[in-house]
Image 1: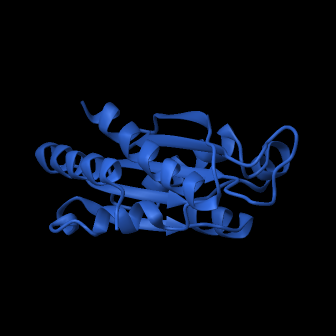
Image 2 (image 1 turned 30 degrees about the horizontal axis):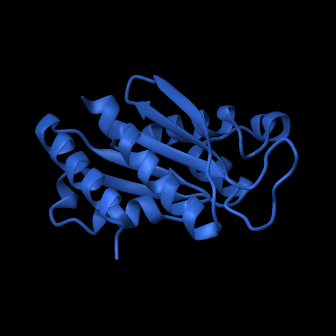
Amino acid sequence: MLDNDILVAAVALAGALQKQRLLLATAESCTGGGIAQTLTSLSGASTWFDRGFVTYSNEAKQEMLGVQASTLATSGAVSEATALDMARGAISHSRAHVSVAVTGIAGPDGGTPDKPVGTVWIAWGQKLGYAEARCFQFDGDRDAVRQQSILHAILGLNARLK
C-alpha cells in the first residue's frame, strides 16, 4: 500500500502533467522502479507516463541513458553529475517532456564516510536540456530510504510544474 503522502503527491503530479499535456520518464537506480510503479498504479497514467528506466548497474546507466563512463569514474554513480546525466538521458531516450532521476545508497551496506547510507541524489530534467539536482540525506532502513526518495522525487516534480 502506498504511503498516504506519496499517494497525495502522485495524484497532484498526475493532474499537473495532464493539465499541461506533458509526458514523464523516470530513471531510477536505488528506488528500483518504485517511482514508476507508484505513478503507474494510478488510473489513466498512460496519458502522461511515457516510460521508466531502471538502471541499477553502471553499465545500464551508460547503455540505456547515455551516462558517460568518465562521469561514473570521476564522480561515481551516486553524484550530482550522474543524476543530471540520468535525467537528461531519460528525456533524450524517450518521448517525455520532463524527467526525474534517482541514484543513491539505500543500504544497509555500500556507504562510505563521504557518501553514507541514505545519500540520494535526485535530478529533474526538461525537454530542452535543462536539469537540476539536489542531494538528500535520508534516515532509516533500506525501505525507508527508498520511500523517502520516491516521495521527494515526486514532490520535486510537482514543485517544478507549478
